[in-house]
Image 1: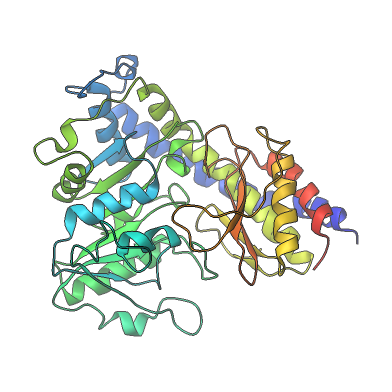
Image 2: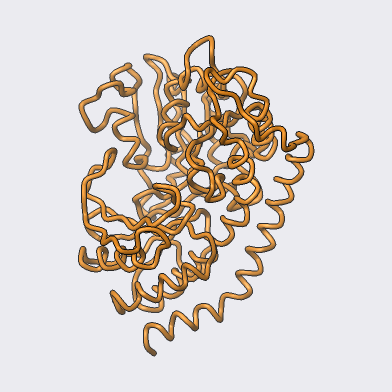
Length: 409
């Protein structure tokens, strides 16, 4: 069977899975609508103030609405967060103090956090420079969480446990909400005062609950990923226990200002509307992921997650095996993007990453991974990580070109 015929067959066999995704979207949209109704969101909340951002009613109601959706005591949703990494860093610096230990429990974290931690780079302003200890718990031989080691991993000065929901640039399985709940329970059994912090990037609205609904003390993420619904122009969020959220806000702004400052610069309507659209956009991305997994599995490429495995985030990884195929794949995606289709991706260094990256991202919002994008580090085994997609049919069109470009394994 030819490669494109396999893609068409994949589309035909996924109808039942797509129906299940639509049912999940309905549940998540229901909790969004409930939060909008209970917090009395109205058109007057689209207005904003300038300057210091004092008494921005729209910003305050957006914070309350977001907190309601994720079952958190409090939240800050801010355009001043330049990325998910920035939101995560504000949370870490807001909570941790010299002599504390940060323990990553799902192996080493994503590349962009390495310089925040101080394990790479010149250490300027890193947690290491502020005398915060860092340790990570290696994965088990199976590539999953080492549950046995986790049961005794918390030390007296382990102030915070970092739980990275996404696989990042690794081949492990991403975490489910059930996994996160189990981690929290195990950590709290050892020390109830240890803060369980979740890097929630790429995971929002994939299931019908978020980490803060199952005991996580704090979580953070980006608005140009899932919760921005593809139209938030920038920003991020921190949500969880009220005192910890305010600590992160004080790191973002300054002590004494905290969550009370920060002009929203006429962006409130886009942030509210993006949050409303987010469940649907996540559902379309998940459909695209299943299509990619099934198609490339049939073509002989290792895929993670596999075609029969439930998706736990909006990232689909495909092991291509060579730099030439990685570049060709990204070029095919770029050529079938709405913006910059005439560009040809080439490997290049990128701030925060150890290896050169090749990246396809013809998106309306620069760097948006809730829109269709694909990237991967130029290092063996040459894995491409595909994210997002506003509708699965766009993913299907781009995949046709990618399949033609690289062929079977």
